[in-house]
Image (cartoon, rainbow, N blue to C red; front, side, top):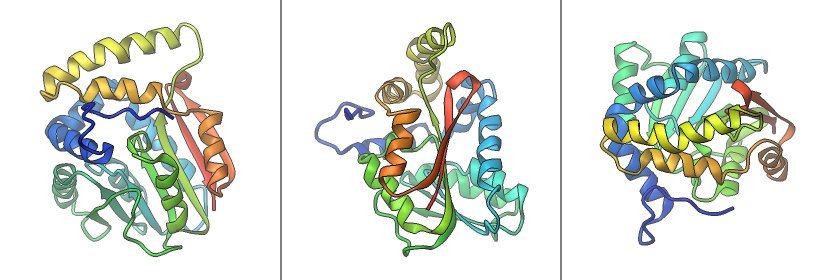
Length: 243
């Protein structure tokens, strides 16, 4: 798989560029998510969490690339018994997440940690569930990051990944390509003041192994009962599997 980086800077690693990018856009990240997706991203997250909670006894969950904690907060509101750790490489994103959690008085249920998704600071077989929303595209080494997710899952634990994909249906495919390539980067650049962040989003989706290709990688790292569920005409997919 070709390596696409946010700033096309050969001197810095992809993960350091990703951390810089999210630090840069953190203040506008939540607004842009809602605005640019017309709010559909919230529906996608709810579908992903419904799939995660189909497994019995999901009590301890890791949310990787948690960002500002949207997915963790949504899960916490659904079930007050679930304990969640949100991990992210961007401190600015985590700081916003911490403030959101404090305001909602969910600090006893959600904890945040700054962590590299490819070197997770957790023991083997720790979590009942591991989830990621729109984060695996940013892994420097995709297979290594997914293997870490597999490592920290308990046997029988569930992995749920929500990620953008390339629609295959006419004319959704063509409309999606135009919007993601031209409209979204322009709006993102104006609001976030980052010249590259939303152009990188388009580029990273183009090179990402989606649909059956991604499911094959899940099988390769040892996941079973894998599946992919296209949402909104294939604009994104929910991928899942059992350890």
